[in-house]
Every structure is written in C-alpha cells, then in structure tokens.
Image (tube, rainbow, N blue to C red):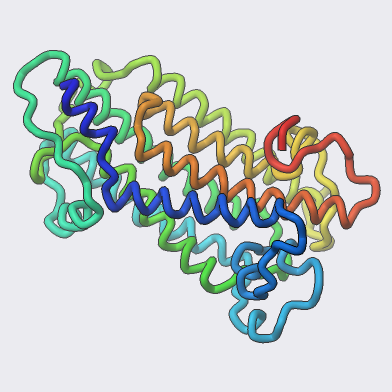
Length: 329
C-alpha cells in the first residue's frame, strides 16, 4: 500500500498537468498585474481575456474588435445548467457503481482513460488497503455531491437572487466556463478507486467508511456555501429597494459579512468551498490541491481587478479592506 501511495503522489498525468498549466497561467497573469505598469502587456485582447463584468468596462474604451465578441455576463447561468446536468449524470453513474456494483459506461471509462486516470491495482483482502479504498470512495462520492449541490445553488442564485447589469464577458471566457464544470466533474470522478471498469463498491457500508475529515469537510462546505449565499444576497440588495424590487443596476459599496474584510467576499467563499472539498479528500489528494491552486489564482486575479475598481470609483471606500485574503492581499 505504501508503494501505491508513493506512486500516486509522483504521477503527473494529463489531468494534473492541465490543472497545473491553468494555475500557472493565472499566476502569471496576476503577477503581470502586480508588476509596474510599463511591464504590462499592451495587447487589448490579453486584457480583455482576463477581465469580465465591471472590470472590463473600466478604463479606456475597448476596441470594437473586442466588443464584437462580448457575451452578456448573465449567461453565467449557463455554466450551472451544464454543471447540474453533467455532474448530476456523473453522480448517478458513480452511485450506481458504488452501491450496486454497476460498471461505468464504456464512453465514460474511455474518457477517464484519455485524461490519464491511474487505475488502482487489486489490493487483496488486506484490511488496511480495503479501508483506505473505502475512505477514498466515500470522499469521491461526497465531493461530487458537494459539486452538484454547489452548482444547483448557484443556478438558483442566478435566476432568483443576482441582479445582472449589461456587463459582458468574452466569448472565450464563456466557452471556458462551460468546459470548466465538465472538467472539474471528471476530475472528481477520476479519484474513485477502480480496477478496469469496476469501481470499489461501498454497498451498505457507507457510514462505516466515514472519518473525521469527511465530517470536517462537510461542515466547511456548508459553512462556506452559507457565507457565499449571504454575500450574493448582499450584492443583490444593493440594486433593490426594501420591497425587493430592482431599482437600478449601478455599483455600490457592499457592507456586511466577509465584505467587511475583503472586496470580493464571494470569491473568498468560493475558494473556501474548494478547500472544503480538499479536506473531504483527506488533505492529501494532489490532483484536487492542483484544482484548489487554480481556483486560488483565478479568484485572486478577479478579486484584484474588483478591488482596484472599487478604490478608483468610490473615494470613501474603506481603506482597511483587502482584495481577497483578509489582512493579507
């Protein structure tokens, strides 16, 4: 078992390489924004691809060729429609395999193989090996449930909570968002112990596999989700009157909850949601930590632009607030 664990840590398969590449790309983009202005790329397309919403509208007028590829920001809801349907389907297949012993469909197994998923070799009847496989199987199931619930909540918020202005995103950002939720679901599913098409079956032993990190991860997930929901309600109420009627689409300074510490409290909550999933995986899942690293740098970049927008727009903006991480950044 120790040999398998060491091998698992050292493998850089296509899936891990992709998340590593994405994390590095957003880190580079963030570093470029933090660098002196003379070092920033002057390419309008580059700036257009790393900004969205209100931060895309601020500053000098964008070239017409960039505006031609605009997609309404309200199309964010499409991301969650895709995620609810796709990851709901993956959750169904996983449930069938874990509890009924049904193999994955051939197309799904072929897709996982293409991504370079490492097969778990048969480990015999050793109790420790069986326990570790059971823990990982339960972790995968819970994280996929979390991802589906998160997407369902965000879809609800897009339809019934958020008030979208006429802000835009680039069509490349739109397509990336659609692919992202497909990829992140496959990343979760790829962590389940399997040999060929057969997945480690939990059967009726679901609760017997529960460990402290499953419970802690679940608590962190619902805690972070509650804060993100509250932050989105705060942002929505800035454009509504006391009766809940939308009265404008202008930007205002948000107050309350985590907004007292950072400009992009909803982005911080998003990061915490993904960290809660890393905890659910037992804190040692290299693949998922690469996903968390990507989320960290992508959200930090967006938070940096948001913070700069607020500071440049509102003279009275609270000086103690940071962009993304309380008291740090």
